[in-house]
Amino acid sequence: MADTLGILGRKLGMTRVFGSDGTAIPVTVIAAGPCPVLQIKSDTTKDTYSALQIGFEQIPDRKVNKPERGHQAKAGKDFYRFLREIRLESVDGYELGQDLTVDMFTPGEKVKVTGTSKGKGTQGPMKRWGFSGLGASHGHEKKHRAPGGIGQCAYPSKVFKGKRMAGVMGGDRVTCINVEVVDVRPADNLILLRGQVPGPKNGLVMVRKQQ
Amino acid sequence: MNAIRKIEAEQMRMDIPRLHSGDTVKVHLRIIEGEKERIQVFQGNVIRIRKGTANSTFTVRKISDGVGVERIFPMHSPFIERVEVVGEGKVRRSRLYYLRRLRGKAARVKIKNTWE
Image (cartoon, rainbow over all chains, first blue to last red):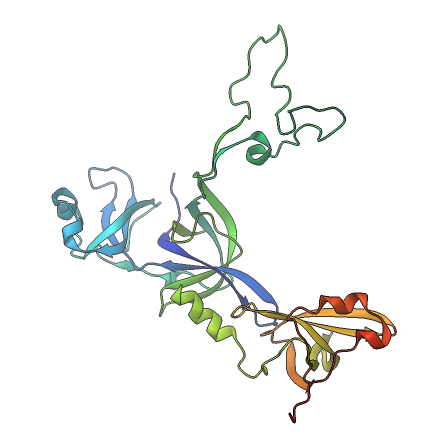
């Protein structure tokens, strides 16, 4: 259950930078943190498990309702839009109100990135599952992107659960592993990651250490 | 977007001259062979400029031993030592793809009269 330390951020978009050897590297720019620790859960608290609750993106107090305000005020920081929990093996060494920043990452390191993928709406099996579809010609009529057969006959006389079919695609929680950190800019709270990251621009992402 | 603009501005090279389609250019390229580094020159006509901040590219076409050769250079690549504009061309469009189907004398770009 225990996870690794991470930070919340927003995906700003993609660009390219030139590496030290001159090659062009496609990068995703993420504005991450600083994320204050708003709650510490451990064996000694009533939660009976170890976790850190971190906040991201300050909001004015008029946007926070009373129960939320009471909870967030305990850390003695401002109010935050997003609160997320990170389960850890041990929370020793973390203090309430301590800021987690992009400093925890170093260029060259591999990280995990979690986000919500772009919603694609209702899609057929070809786009959603990569089916090949049916023939484009040779007498195929009105069935070019259909799934084809979806089961057998008298036995089992049903379609198995989980059969891949058309439906809503995207909008899922997606985690990418082994994403390389190209650059870290603590002054601007930016992380540059090689390649793509799940989700749209301005989407919330979590960047976590790999171990 | 400002953060991305800033990153791109850092990547851009300000020493590259302003290029136009039809210009004859010499692109001095850094070639790394093993440990040695040398400069190779690629001379030809600019037939396309793709705009963009750090992502902009330009395509140079030349005729090498009777065979057309095109190379696409990232405008801000560190592999480019320098770009020299040899001559300005007089052209009426920005993408000179028509040069590809022309051969010999017809495949030349008119030179602009800069004294006019």
